[in-house]
Structures are given as structure tokens and as C-alpha cells.
Image (cartoon, one colour):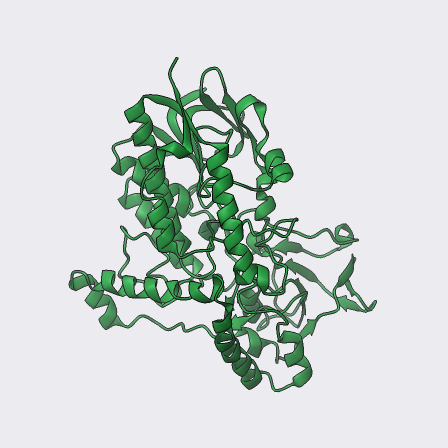
Length: 488
């Protein structure tokens, strides 16, 4: 049994951010558990062709670790991962990380007021506090399709890209047209013999205003104090303005929709193909995507877009809803991740043995500020329910959460508290307010179903306000909202 005051799970932006803030606050008695052999989380694991961010690089980074050398407006996976490794080195985080340790669960001890964190290796960790930085986009969602096990060729999810598979001259089927798929489809289309893309619902695809970073701009950021900070602030407010349309003011969205439709009409002259690619729901209802190459790729002679659904996978292909077989040497799933139901994969037991997954299934996925949960003392989630964004950088949200957690730890020390959890009343009040707001937003009113919604149609994913409001609401610990347990 390894004993630490605090256990952090994961080394993505969340886990790294938590570790940095703990060190900044003078707390050194913690360990970060990472299942892989290096830091990076999502940006380490997703190595599919064309993987890049859809938030500008200067915002999708730590505010206290600015990078003057971003190569372009929207950086790719390798560059973001390199940035994260560099930050881990410069901030001295690596000595606190136990690599190759996969967490399988955690159990709260009511009598001793500590967590036992269990691992796949069988070596447990004991901690007063657990910070779960496991992320929301790390468990691939592979649909159950009849006959999938009979397919004789390689098949894999985009998040687990098999680089040993040679696509050159092959017949490839891609299932799904989400954020990852629209990035890798244009690239693999250039090397495969035939590419069949199965689309269930067409996404809104905005042109991507991506361009290389001019050398003069890099030099300016490096040499002129405050220049990069000013540029980042301008980016923040530009992105923040997008929340106006998503957060209930849906009447301004037609302007953006017209831009996309003009772009689509200009790019896709074929009316039948254009109709297949045109969404029948409001922009923002599903995740808004960005690409300059996806629509043109649909015009290639070796690319076919199918909207007939997938009924069955056979040894050498995929059968669509009309009974037509599409031959395939390789099947690639671009079907996203488990998000709301990701908690089903967490074996966490709180007070009295309460099971977190069961609690969320039965009573709904509810937390306090997306960070803490009633009946689960001294447990903090990073990017928990209703703190994801559709308009700005989640790294901003992560930074507010890490600061809140440190403030909570300071308040526990000040009070001599051994355990703290949000009261049921405070948690309920928070969720009532959030659900009232998301019901007014485009995610509920936009005429679609998406991974933002749970099985009851409730949005348990998106933060339905401006991000500066989240900063305001987490800037201090509202002590009456919590039950504080003192040492016996």
C-alpha cells in the first residue's frame, strides 16, 4: 500500500494542471497515476492521420505556460503533445508521476476517511483526496454491429489507430462522420483505392481559418512583453462571443448557417450529394466541425458517401440498409467516445458503499459545479458533467477547477476538516439551474440528438453559460454548500 495525501488520475491537461497548481500551493505529498508511459492523455493517444485541435492553439494551452512557437492557428496532435511534454519537464511534474499504473477503481473508507485507489497491477494507493483527471474523450465508442466479429480484415477505432495497417490501394469503409472522421477521411482518401463513408447524420462543417504563424508574429510574442497575452485575450473574447448564439439566443445562428450553406453550395455542385451533406437541424445542436478539405474529398471519384445505414458486417464488406454490400479490406470506426456513460466504466464506491455509476444511472448524472458529488467526500472530477464547452477552450475550465480544488483544500486545512462533500440541497439547486438553461440552448432546441444528451434527453455535458461566469462561480468556496466533517 502506497500512502499519499492526494492521488491524481491521468496526465492530460486536467491531471497536469492539477499537479502544477498543487505544487504552486506548496503541496508536495501527491502522486499522479498514468496508465501509459508518457504524459499527454488525449493528445498522446489519438494519432490518427490529420489529428488536430479545433480551438486556436494560443487558447488551447495553459495561460501560465504560453508557447510563442505554435506553427499555425490550429495545431496538430504531435505539436500539442510536444507542448505538453515540454510543460511537464519545465514544471518538474515527472518525478510525481507513476507511469504504467492503470486505475481500476476507488473505495471510500467511512471509518478512516480515506480513499483506497485500486490498480490493474494490484498495488493499491491510499489517499485523503482523489482528483480524477480521466477526461471525457478517452473511451472509444464502438457500435455493436451484427457480424462485426466475422470481418476478415483489420478493423479499428480512430482513437486506436493501427499504424501497421497499410491503406495504400485498399478498399476502406469508414463508419461515422464526427470530429475525428472529418480530419482523417480527406487524408486517407488520397491513398486508398476506394473509400466508402457511412454517414448517419450530416455534421455542420465550417471553413477552417487555419494558416501558418508568420515568423514576425512569433518574434513579436517572444520579444515584446504582453503581446502574446493581449493576443490570447482577444482570442478568448472572440470565442466567448459564440456562446451568445448557443446559450439561448438561437435567432442569430441563421447567419452562421448561411455561411456554411454558401460554402457547401460553392464546393459541392452536385445537388443530390449536397442534399446528403446538408444538416436538417440547427447549427450548434451537435458539435460544430471545421475543415477546408472534407467537402472537396466527397467529390473524389474513389469516395462514396452512403446514408443508407449499416445493417451488418460480413467477412469482406459492409451491408447497408438497402441490402447492398460495400466491399472492404479494412473497416475504420469514426464513431466517437463514451461521454455521459463514461461513468459506467468507473468503479467508484462512496459513503456507505454507494456506487457512483449506479447513482448516476438511477438519479441522473448530477454533480456540484461539475467537480464534486454528494456522498463522495474528498473526490474531485476535472471536466466533469456540464463543464464541457461548445464555444471556447476547455483548458480555461480546467484552470478554474484546479484553482477551486486548491481553495477547497485550503479551506479544509483552515477548518481542520478531514472530509468534505457538497450537500444534497446545494447539488440539486445547481443542477436545477443548469437544466433550465440548457433547455433553452441550441443543444435541446436544435432538433437533433447528440452525445451531449443522456438517455433521458437531458444535456449533462455542456456548460450553458459564458466561461467567465464559471470563473466567477468557482472563484471562492461557498462554504454553506458543503458538509464539513471534523476529526473525531
